[in-house]
Length: 308
Image 1 (cartoon, helix red, strand yellow):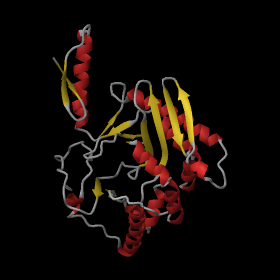
Image 2 (cartoon, rainbow, N blue to C red):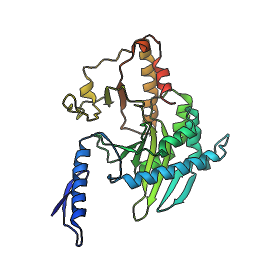
Image 3 (tube, helix red, strand yellow):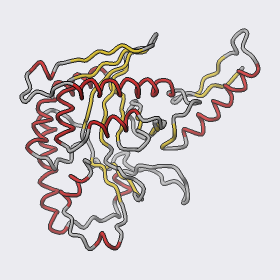
Image 4 (tube, rainbow, N blue to C red):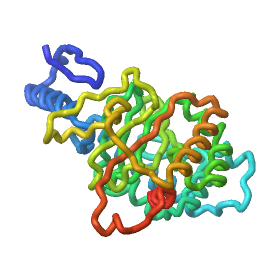
């Protein structure tokens, strides 16, 4: 008998007829790697990883999808058909679909992003990274090698909901460019041979660049099951803490307090109108250099700076 690790469980499987000893050793090594990966928050999806071929297909498919939309003329005014448009591209072994591509391109441009930079991040030769959190979500999270963008798997129902509210979502950002809402930059699906269709969205990482971030928090405004046990000092595990971990922390906003409260009210009001109940505020702690302390940056301008 051989022990094979899975993400949520451990299952015993029998050695298949004709399986070589070398293959068995490789499978055991792979299982050990997967157990080690479970202990880390962020790790590279290299050739030994179960998602390696999937992410290679994603990079190739996204490169071509972005190129196709980039070469198309973006309309001055959008119609209802633009919100329901779907670009289908066949590749060797899989099919990539892009939803409302011209609208998301327009949205990225409004955020000051270049299509060349966006395409390069998503399709560079560097391996994607996988982020495993303590979230209850069953979604898979991938991060581009430069850590600028997240790819998150979605259910068909979630994607349909996003596309249904897309016009409202973009109108909200047009009215409030300093919104704290996550910036969703694309919606796609991939169908690989003999596999079910996978839907996913692309989001801007709010923690980019992350070299100086010393703490990450996911704040929901409640206390039930909102504690994450800290790892021992010196641990390399990437943790996202919760409300109860944040209790002793203080953020001095001074004159910017009123702006933050107002923008939070606007954003949560927008989500409430859409009957979206489960959301949280991501907070990162980053020490300032001496020269940065002397610069009078507003919180709103800091938020806008994260878009480029």
